[in-house]
Length: 230
Image 1 (cartoon, rainbow, N blue to C red):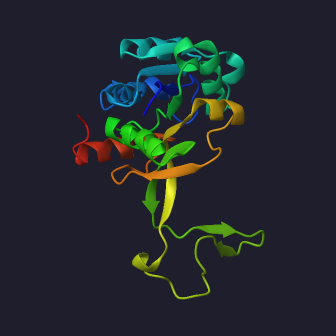
Image 2: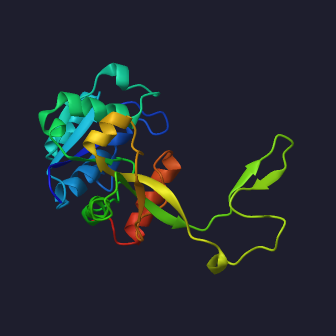
Image 3: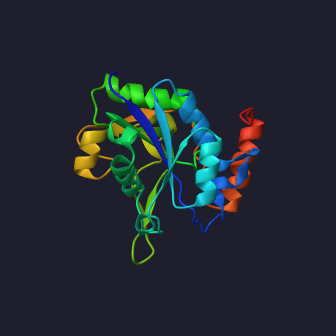
């Protein structure tokens, strides 16, 4: 792989589900610190930037070795996309602007590892893709609810006998943890998916998103029980 790779971690100050989420201690460290440490340990990443509108988050980012980038308030509200933070980073930070590859990491996946980041970045390069993103295999039977309350099978035909797990086609869910894409194509498209996008399966990734206090308790408990709390 050639060219510079920069990881950008969007981390807004506001969080309604879990107040102060991005610097709330998770397994003894501020939540954002887990993503920073994983990115800094990744062999494919040259520089780590945390984009935030919150001074405490930026101070925490610097304390753990990342570059803190102050994000303008007009792209920091509830409606602001993660893409807007990356586009701002490309414009505002020389290192990010000079990058060939951008890696977007989400704070809400604190168990992400350096090896997983390296895998997603490397697979994008190996498969000559524009975007590579982390996924996990899922086996759920998904449903939509019609206006009259009737259930409609999304990934299965409910009118037929229930298939065994091993007989169903493989399906995957986006983890939301890791995205790697070419900077030039991303800036032109303005979104994370463009051109040729390839999913990268992370066999050990968890499926718990940190959106509520209950999620937080569940993920910390899983991390401790599975020996991933160190």
